[in-house]
Structure formats: C-alpha cells, structure tokens
Length: 413
Image (spheres, rainbow, N blue to C red):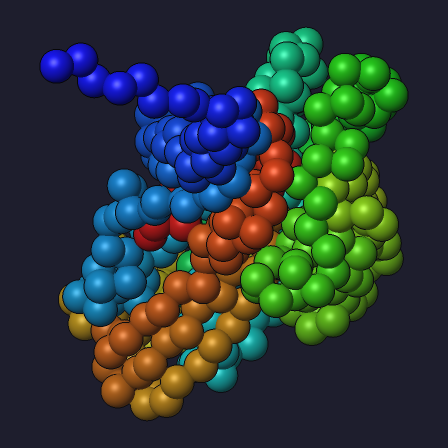
C-alpha cells in the first residue's frame, strides 16, 4: 500500500533553514596557534576560537619554558642566583642583574657608592635600548618589514660588543654583584659608548622613517588591539604597554632608585592604547635612554665600584685573596655559606624594558633565601590577551602579540 504524500509548505522549509543557521552560529573553529609558531615569540600557545577569520575567544597557555627559578633560588646562596636572573628577560640580562641585586641590598640595608649606582643606570639603559631594538625589529618583521629588522639587529650587535668589553660576555652577562658590580669600567669604554650614541640616533630616525608613516604598517597597527586605561591597570600591565594606554607611570620617576632622580628624561605616553601607540612609546623610550646614557657618561663619578664596608657580602679583590689570609677566609665563607643576611622580608621592583620586574624575598637569616617570588612583567602583560584578542582577525593577533613585546623566559620562569 503506497504511502500518502506529505505536503511541505515553503514556510516549513524556511523554518528548517533558519533553525539550521541558528545552530551553525555555535559551530566555532578551534585553532591552536603555537607553541611552535614564529609569531608567538617563544613557546607560547594560544587556543583561538574562530568565527570565520574573527577571533571570538583567546586562551593563552603558558608553562612550556618553566624552569623553577623561584624554587632554585631557595637552594643556593644569594650570590649564586645572579646568573639565573640573566635567563629571565634574556634580552636585558644586565637590567635583571641590577633589579635582583637592589632587592637583596634592600634586605641587607646596604648602600652602594655613587660610581656603582651610575654604572648600574648606564648598563640598565643600554639594556633597554638593546631589548627595544630586538622587540621593534621582530615586530616589524612580523608585519612584513624586513629592512627595519636588519637595521635594529646591526645596532644591537654594536651594543653587544660593548657589553662584551665590559662584562666578558655578550648575552648572559652576570655583571652585577650584591654590593657592587663585578669589575670597574675598562679604560676608554665610556668614549665608545658616547660614539655609539652619536651614530645611533640617525639610524633610529631612519627606522622611524621606514615605519612610522608606512601605509601598510599603519593599517596593521593603528586601531588594532586597543587597551583602555582601565583595562591596562586592571590587568596589571606595566612598562611601555601601560604607558601606551595613557597611564603616566614609570618607576624611575615615581620611585627613583640608583640615582635616577639625578637625570633628566621624559616619560612617553600614548593616547589610544593601540598597537601603534605601543610602538611609538618604545621608539621614544630609546631616545630618552640615549639621553640618560649621555648624562651618565658626562657625570660619571670617581671612587669605588663596590661597597667597601660590605665585607660579609661582597667578595674581596682577587689580588688580596691570593696574598692575605684574612681575605682568603672571607672569600671562602662567602662562597661556601653565602652572604649572611638578616631575618625579614622585602619587595623591590625596577623599571625593566618589559615593565616592572619585582623580587619578593623572605629571609630567615643566613646565606640562602627562605622564599623568593619573582613578579615578571611579561606574565602580567600577557594576561590581557583574552580581553584584547576577541574581535580581532587572525592576522591582527600577530600584530597584538608583537606590540606587547614579551619574553617567555621571564613569563614562565
């Protein structure tokens, strides 16, 4: 017996199609960007939910470079941990060394002489220039501008040559010591730093001319990844990312350390909080760092480069260790037991190239910290990605990541 034909109206068909379209709105493509992706600038993984090419959700996944630095610090002396700070923001190891040493010196209530403070400011600002050159060169490369990358890397290599003459290493320097620095400035080194500054500013102008009014770069950066003042503060952003959103905060001005109050410089501030503003802030910061470097070179004080009264903290000079029994014993005690610190807890943060790098140290006395917590700016800066990335195209995510300028070494620690 034949089945009776069922009549289907046009309205029924339309309703079915509409219901299907409503269901399809919830079908999102999940895309894993990284951790092995050149645009994530390290082993960062982003889990992106996409509606076409538009990001609807972004989940950063960190921890691929975790080395347990904070736990390692609890199992070695204060001096032994200095080389580990090189591996945090490995683009600015000299600045990391300074921040850590200042934190321990705050615990020990130790003041270093004026020459040591000036040397620390000098190397920190040179590190800022070096780190920003790397960040901006890689950012330009991400967006298709290869020439700028070649310019910035050339200047960065010149800085690394100066670092090598000062510290003996180009990359992981371990130059700063608790209570001073490893060695005094080489003869004629300050003149080389001044010559670098003289030739660097014209090159910086060339890089700016290549990018700042470039139509393609503007389309990729202007109005992309906007972070409001409220979001920047709420998500704990610091450094150029915070200042790019219009928040006038700089620890070198607000809480001066190492004699920063003696130098004149401006703090560049953005207005829109987009990728373009963050780019402009870093460019201007390099000019201001050159301004500080020139002031330090001109006013470099004479005197010791380490605290001579810190006998239980700073190792004695090598020639005295080899000729004096007292210095030999002192060096043996510092190496084997570590610098003896009082009980207490301190927190200190410095204005590093990526933002505020902080060290929270708990001491129960002795030469080894009881607890240490590192406040890494890259980790905090990445926290804003779930807020900023939704609404961006996939290609815009590359621009946002480059503008945040993070390093996974200090993010994961």
